[in-house]
Amino acid sequence: MELGSNNLSSLAPHVFDGENYQAWAIIIQAYKEVLDLVKEFERMQMKDSESIKEYSNKLIGIANKVRALGTNLSDNRLVQKILVSVPERYEATIASLENTKDLSKLKVIEVVSSLQAQKQRRLMRQEGSMEGALKARMQQGEGGREKK
Image (cartoon, rainbow, N blue to C red; front, top):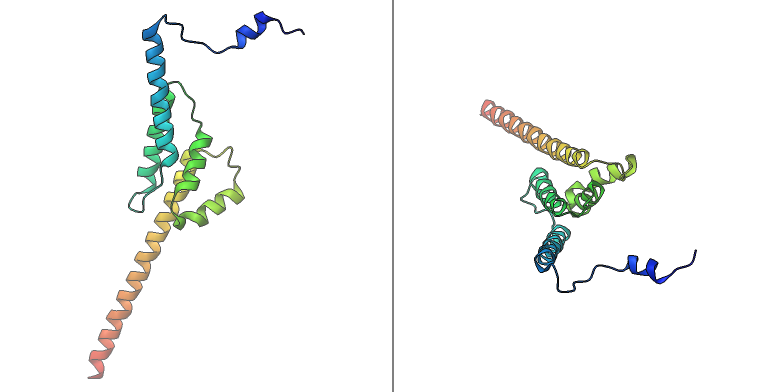
């Protein structure tokens, strides 16, 4: 197939020629908003004080704004962002997900649920160890009284 000037001109990007300024102004503003949102998305890191749910809701909110402006931000990109931006205390769960699941097919809700489950297990273990420590302390206190 021969490339003529007609074929090349159809591949050229749209150029502002002074007409339809209002339409171009809207397009440029939307483009700037998308760039700002994507920059915010890329810079986000989960804070130690945040829960997984709070953090994932922020990321999903930004993704929805980007999508509303006509740019696709895939669920796969959201999953990747969550996996690389949560604190190190979630490394075991992330490694498990990477070893047992196909990350390209993993849904955001699955990642969030797995990370929340790890947090729950950690809290339950801490409560269990505190209860055990309190029981041991009570028994030690009772034993000490009997000896006197």
